Length: 620
Image (cartoon, rainbow, N blue to C red; front, side, top):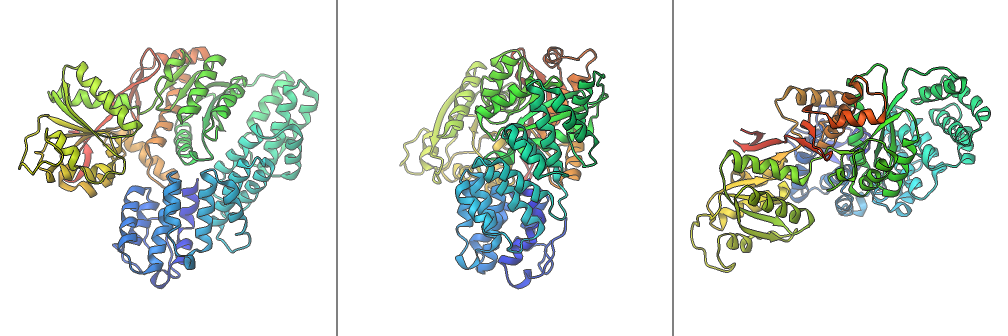
């Protein structure tokens, strides 16, 4: 949600940091800063960011930080980089840029973003005072909503749930609070999972006449029902149902009340549970998944309707397991989508299997689907990427001899091992393999060894490679730096193969002509000509004002597959839904045509991409 909030206040941030032509400017959707030409790096970066093209915005801003001599414009670039890196969940990088802003230019907006960053990376005791000090500092409504939501995150981390609800209540009351859904979801998670009965009663009183107050009454009624006191729960439920306050969970209250009255509930009786990290370190990623899920539900209404019951794991494994238990004991929940990170997904999978609740997780962690027959996984795994690359390189192109140049980290070593095993199983050979440090900038030693030479050997002139293709499992900015050195150190061109981390404008911007013809894979390609992908991208942009990421696409497909299973005739129970998922074949998802193998892992065709004429395009 941070991106939507800060996009609205981006101009104010820059006006406070900058002087000269930016003073009094106005930034409108799709427009540039008045008084600056569209080609100005600062104006262009803002336009790109508001269009959801963060990678390109970051590239321009990094260049501006290095080349700009005006300290006010350099500070504006640093602040915007800090903001973008917060949105990407890269909090250490965000702080590095924010801390480079001179003390004389550390405005309220700098303090605002730093406080939000500190809280998001777990330093609530440091970040909360920073944000509280901004009370009454004249922030714009968008800035104030950001401050209050971050304070709610901080209070939650400090185990002050009522204080967190107070901040959310104030955020919802801010002028132009157009995106109340995520704030209400954050409050809903607190009311469900963090408050005891006396605190729920206090919250219902404190926030009476508001959506949070109605939700507090509903949760209090559910707690009372859980201890088998329907007479005490009934007046609470009747009050919620009769309330005129706009309230997303009124239908749940109606269902509970109907159950107490012995009447049949037909409408809205089916729900899909969702467990995602919506706060904390991974909150930005969970938010992107959530948006994709909600869009899928909106575009595919069922009769009777299906609801999403969204819970916040906070990225914590224990919380995820407890949420699975709570959802499994809610009769209308037929399946669960999520979580996202490895540890919470593993805990959720074990508990879902125990509770016999079908789980469709999005985590890349190996072995999740092997937990049991109730667990399915739809994710862009390392193994799936390698298999797709090798089908192309070996089965279709006939290449047999390979080299691997990999970063010496867990991901790089995993890709190296999977690639080497896959090549051997297909009858090929990996004839050379070299690692490099993550912060390496000079690759002479590695290239020389790939050539079969000593690292300090004299330049031998052009050396024909002893392999047909070179696999580099790293990210675009590093690959763009590395690949030109292959030619510089006299290695003749070979076919380059890469992973989804290559799918970034940085690949071509940094690598230039040296990456021409490179082939790599991704689980989502927003520029795909496929009608389903084009429609999804257009609908997502229209709803959220930004381009979708692979996380949004995975969330969209996860809910889409569950809805498809629920549409299957005869699916009325969790076991019947599990069977429908197991039989799912060639689901036309925006992350590729998807089926589930006997283990429960997604078997899908990834997007094969290639650099052609300086652009990243579908292959061929």
